[in-house]
Image (cartoon, rainbow, N blue to C red):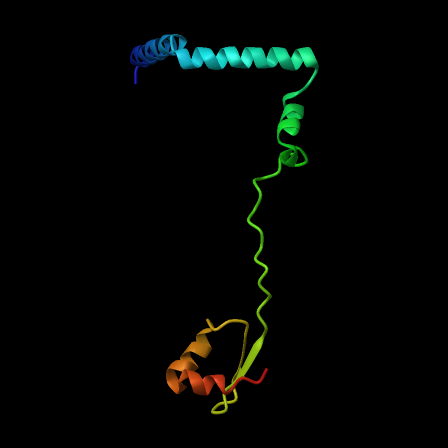
Length: 123
């Protein structure tokens, strides 16, 4: 791209941004927000408080957490699963698992049936 084309492109972008800025300057909602921010900063200076202290006054629960992430969901109160040990009497293979989603255990249940595999439970 030539320098002249680049210049014209930037000039058009600047004109578009200036037009957008003018639109925002006339926005009533933005004017109210600016007025609120100005008054709030004035009050903070007048009474010698920081924004963090005000948040601590209004919401004491978040005051003790400095830059802490949003609270993670609490862990469930469910007890941990116990270890189960299955021993295949046909080949002597042993499977230790805490859940029923073990690949070998699924294969055994498909081959021998769930009730029979459950009878192989040793622990």
